[in-house]
Image 1: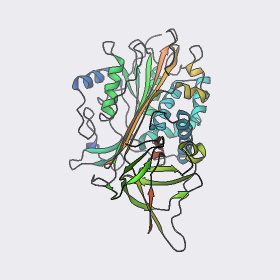
Image 2 (image 1 turned 180 degrees about the vertical axis):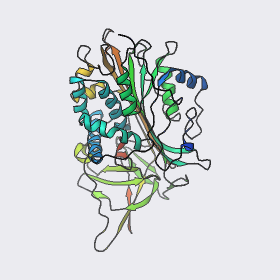
Image 3 (image 1 turned 30 degrees about the horizontal axis):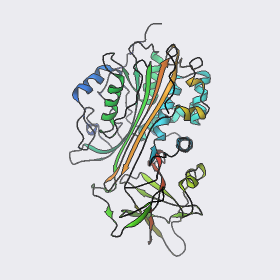
Image 4 (image 1 turned 120 degrees about the vertical axis):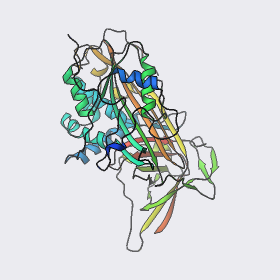
Length: 449
């Protein structure tokens, strides 16, 4: 089979953000520099190498509107988020965070390349039909690529990004139609790897640049991989409009860690938001917001209950039922919470397999014929995530890399106004959602230091 020739024009050196309707194109981020912060600039030789490998780039939409069933689609994405977060579970070693959005996007791209039973199994795992996916994925990409605030020079300093890419082996045979579907539906940047470069070094450099140096993972991908489908999510957001720091409480609170120890520490003092904390027999729940309206919700087990009691589908899927007012009062509540860091680094192939995806991982059964006639299958789904919440704001990033190898290669073994204070004073579960309610990150915090 002749190799497909890609006729789409090459655009920028690295993914540029889709602009919100109110944003001007002059405010796009410099693709060869980190987006704000003081991290070391992306090495020019790395940027040049990656630019030479790009053979096609997406065309960002000028303006998109949601479909009539977008809210229903978001609900299904969040059901996938809950299922994925729970199946990955808590780390025995410490605090855990994953990005269900990143996993959803990467599997969505795989669905676009797959056909027949392979596609059906992936769609069933995602919990959507193909029409629902294609009808809504563009707007989901659009809303997850926004400039949230700018500095005095109109340069983006706080933002959310959701970047899709496809990395092809120099010898990979692909179909033009499949590549066009990826660029049109998922705004995917497509790269053909240069055989003179190590795949892991190149992709790590790309991820580091897209996440402002915040995430620099070792993906341990095979240099013989036929292709890698990858999604990168990055969020940097502040609490206060002008970037000031949250105040600390005057008094110290005893934060009760998962291991039974406790730490006497001041807590971050959030702002008052409408509502009264939800309280059940097993947990307490309330939220705080970033400057741009992203919601960080804390689910705190009551005394006598554990994270395992509240890190459940019933709790995570429970609709908010805060009481905002009654005949006598209007309620306002603020969260007092600790600074924290959480992370994850692992192969989630086994997790996705438990969702009923089988052919995708089977060398003899995987049907990727919408992208290639080569016999390929998924050998690894690497997910790496990290999130920090401090006095300034929130910074989080994640990558999901799906490695597709040729079936002829040997199979590798997988590696193992009345005002309340809502005090987060013990190990807790958290979710971080955007303004549409899409879960970007979810996890548990067992210990603070």
